[in-house]
Structure formats: structure tokens, C-alpha cells
Length: 255
Length: 214
View 1 (cartoon, rainbow over the protein chains, first blue to last red):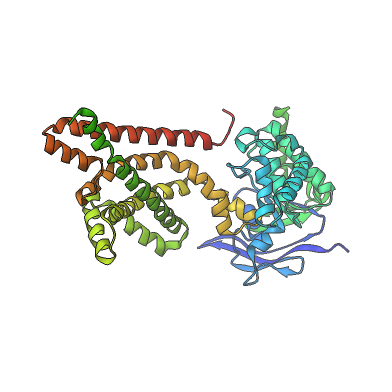
View 2: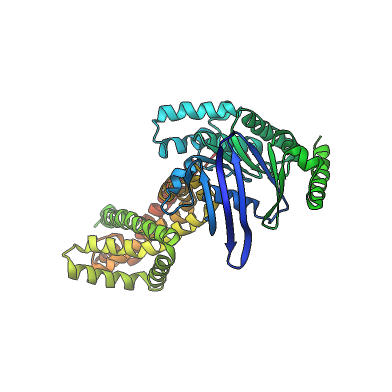
């Protein structure tokens, strides 16, 4: 029986009158890769940001393992150490080298010695294939390299879960592959991952479960086979067909 | 009196000019930075108070403020005209420097703060290790402008009787009746001080610039 690592119950987020999502339930088991898909503006990114408390939900609960992180008095900084996040636009610290980016959390949050942090950071950078770029600044790296550094930065904290918010959407088509490859390897290594993406190839191949969200609700979730080949709802079929067509074309153009 | 003596009498005021600047500029930076951090990160009430502070201090001529602060300060504590004048000028400058630092802080994208929080840094750590180092770099060009202004405005303390460059130029101009030469000498010294300072800050800006590919 797989253990749930992240449990979301009855989660609601509103901005004033504007309901982003309502009464949302989701369970993520250890080692799972969950891919969340859906049209833009359906609250996927907001959902991810609620999971590591960058955004506070209005209602509902989230558990990380046995700890309710939405409980009053939770140490948010403590929680975020255990939940890595990768952003669409990389968000590397511009004034620090690749190594500095990966080290910052280790020295300031985990209070590692400079030497130990350097070793660990180099290890994480080799994991994403960028040990030779350790002394490069973000401005000297390609988008794909920046995103891999961002992944290494998140991994360095030894997170329980990794959140990916459209990690390849800001990349040129020819740079997408290197980032997806790192993520694929990560999933194979058993990392628990929640990925918001439009990369259907990745979803089909790597996801244990695909979650289709629309207008603040989870319309349908299931294995890639169920979702691609026998979706229960027409809306799911329609969306998947559209997105595959659209991005399939882009992939061909890139080649 | 020969020409050399004439010039060196005025030039010896440089010690005071530089001294006033070296007190006013850093004290203004310290106060300005703290106020800017409160302005940007301290919530609505703090932002309003800071805005008021900035509006008032920037809305009054520096010389008028200097007199007010000088007489207020020297009533309370017994300070020399030099020290009281320098600190007063620092306070005048703090409002301008607050705006410089505030602009720089706001220019660093809020996403940088969010990314730092996502790694697990506290808000304070994120500001200190991620936002401030980037803001400092952005603040150097406008700050260099403020440094030039303070060097020149240090001449205002002449009104308090401090024997700085302008005061000396006036005195020796009066006694020798060579006003034009006296003030021209003062102008050259001020210019050299400002020029050297802005050059130095330019170098600092280049040295601290973050490498990136064109």
C-alpha cells in the first residue's frame, strides 16, 4: 500500500469575488508523478502555490506526511524546505553563480558549512549535468541551463516533494528536451513530483496519474492510458486532442 | 599674500568639506536604507509615515531645513557646528536616499523574493541575501548623483560658520578684495571632489556588475 505524502482536502482559494478553485481534493502518493493539465486560468499554478504555502488557501487542509501544514502556527519556512519548487521563468538569483544559487539554501537555511554546502551543491549540479557551469551567472546560461540549475537548487534541500509550474513553457523548443530529460530521470529515481505542464509526451510517458482541471474543478483524473484512450468526459477528450495537436505541431517544427 | 598661500588657505577647507560629506552621506544612507526597507516591507501604515517623511523633507529647501535641524539639535545637545551641521545635512539627504533605495528595492522583481521563500529562506533572509545585494547594484548610479549633491550641498554649512571651502573663499575674498579668484578656486576644488567621487563610484559600479552574455 503506497503511503500518501501530500493530501489535499476540500481546498478553496478565492481572490475577493473571484473563485480560483473550490472544494478540491487530491492525494499524492510517495514516488508518484502527477501531471496537472488544463486550460490557462483554471487555477493550476495557484494550486501548486498553495501546496508550499506561497499562497494561503481560504479553506481546506493540506497534509505533508502526517503534518497539517495549513494549521495555524505552522512554520512556513520549515515546510517549504521540504517542498521544492521550480518556476516557469526559472527565477534564479541573478547576482549569484549557479553554484551560489544552489548553495544559498544550504548555508542559510540548513546552516551547512561553506565547504559541505559547496560539495553538496556541486553534486546536485552534476545531477542535472551542469557541474562545468558552476561558476557561471544566470545571465551567462541558456534558458534550459537556467532551469536545470533551478531544479538543482530545489533538489539540494532534499525535498519530500517537487512542484513544477510549467517548467518548459518559457523555453525555446530546442531547449525543452534537456529539461524534460532531467525531470524524467528524477521521476525514475523515485522523486515525488507534481507537474503542471502542456508537454503531453512527458505526461504520457512519465505520469502515474494525470489530473485534468478546468474552471477551478478537477474534471477527471486517471492513468495516462485512461485519460488518453478512454476518458470518461467529452471535455477531457476534447482538451487532450487540442493540446496534443497544438504542441505536436510545435514539436515537429522544432525538429 | 602670494598666490600659493591664497589657494592653500581656501584648499585647507577641503578637510571640512570632505568631513561633512563623510558624515552626512553615510548617516543619510543608513537612515535612508532603514526607512526604505520599512517603506517597502513594513506594511501600509509604515509606508504612509515614510511617504510623509519623504514629502516634507524634500519639500523644504535644504538650507532652511539645515537651520531648523541645527538649532533644534544644538538646543538639545551641545554639538559643534561642524558635527551638528553634518548630521543635519545627513537627515536632509536621508529622504532622498530613501527614495533611491526604495526605487532600487522595487526594481528587484518580487519573484526573486518568492523564489527565495520557496527555497525555505525567511522573509528577512530573503530580503538580506537576495533582494538587497541586487538592489545595491541598481542603486549605485542614482546614489552617485546624490553623493555629488551632498558634496556640493556641504557648502551650506558655511552658513553655520564652519570653515569649509566656501566660507574660506568668502573670507579671503573679502580681505584681499579678489572675490572672483577666490570663488573660482573654490569652484575648481568642488569640481575636482565631485569628479573624483563619481569616477570612483563608476568604477565600483563596473566592478559589482553581474556578468552576463550580450
